[in-house]
Amino acid sequence: MPLLDRRLVVVSGKGGTGKTTVSAALAVLASRSGKRVLICEMDAKGSLAAAFDVGSLPFDAVEVSPNLFAMAMNTEDSLREYLRRFAHIPFVGRLGVLARTFDFVADAAPGVKEILSLGKLCYEVRERHYDMVIVDGVATGHVIAQLAAPDVIGELIKVGPVHEQTRWMREILADPAQCGVVLVTTPEEMPVVETAELVDQIRAQTQVDVAAIVANRVLPELFGRNDEMVFDALGHGAALDALHAAIGGEVDAVLEGARLAVTMRRGGAAQLETLRDRLPAGIGVLYVPELFSRSTGRRSAELVADALGEELL
Ligand SMILES: Nc1ncnc2c1ncn2[C@@H]1O[C@H](COP(=O)(O)OP(=O)(O)OP(=O)(O)O)[C@@H](O)[C@H]1O
Ligand SMILES: [Mg+2]
Image (cartoon, rainbow, N blue to C red; front, side, top):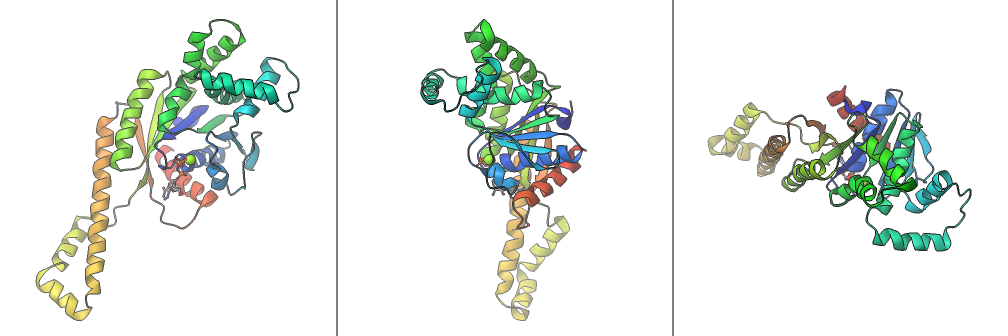
């Protein structure tokens, strides 16, 4: 199922690789095509608000651009909404004692917080409040626990409303036509190794389909083979002497810069090859270039959306 046709897309990956940027860009891309999109930040960093040039994001989604609604996850608000909707407790103001009890239970029982946060988003999918829900998800170390939470709790609690909740969540999460994970990496050794391992873990320990890998911050090929030959020729012997005589020692820094650009690009390309070799068949890699512009926030999201659009559309 094409990525943009899925209704729930969870973005994860190693810290700092561009999860928030890529999530925002996917949301921009989907909303451009007229879809009504919800994007949710799962960690409380506030980077998603910055990606849309707004100060902060509340739990109740706000429209940050036409068709694009953004929210920040908050387990206490999610619990309150859950109680209102499913336990028919009409209004819970300040949760007070209940919240403290909840924290106690949630800290002791794995999966409770995860199921409340992911459950809220699955609910939005189930009720078709949005055409697409994009999750700026938790990083590598935590995403398995989040995606597997309905399985874990569903096995623990076999009857009643909580079991019913895990049942329909699992139906959405396990259906590759509806849900998929996108893992973001950069073309560097550690992120690539971590990504390949995470793909294996997601496939082994959860029901969720890995929809695509985004290789972010890929360096452009500034110089081709012929350019390299030119730089090599200029870098020693009579040519270099002539350049030194005509221009001076500054020439060395320029030649060094060119060599560095070639080395970095080649190193990144080798890492991307390793990544493609390690990935199971059928998982595509989408490439997003390093943005050299000074733009931040919404402008960056738009530029990354353009790049992803070329890869996807
Ligand atoms: N393609 C790109 N070109 C240039 N800079 C980028 C690109 N993608 C992301 N960045 C920059 O890298 C930094 C980290 O990006 P981002 O916040 O999206 O990563 P993250 O994975 O969400 O991080 P965290 O793990 O902290 O949540 C930001 O400063 C962002 O602007
Ligand atoms: Mg982030």
